[in-house]
Length: 166
Image (cartoon, rainbow, N blue to C red; front, side):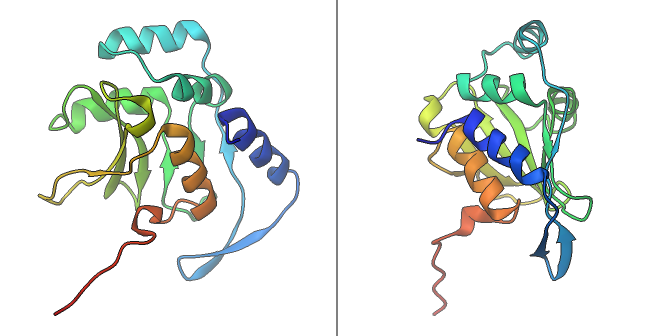
């Protein structure tokens, strides 16, 4: 069964060996950069500052790594809570119960977590410059992390999407 510790421990093992991946038309180093973990006090202060409790799987993620970055050539990452706090003031059009937990394509697309929704369906995708509404991913943070890692930050939310042109 998928869990945050399992996913992250697998990534730490992958980081022990060098490898490359075809990513966006170029070959890049395949690696994941872990940030310093958050202790429970830091997580509690963040929850108090935003006025909402975080989902348990996301707290577990933060207690192992406060964000996750791909190789320097990749344009997607999972920001730490300091960056999330900064983004709340910049992207103030999001409802207050949403936090940006992922940034794709240099910030053009955000992964958001709804802190007032059932944790099993709390993840959303939103194009920051689009008038379109957020798209539900229908999953929890653990599944979102799994998809993020599997796709190496590419647009996994379009997997299985069909387009019909008439």
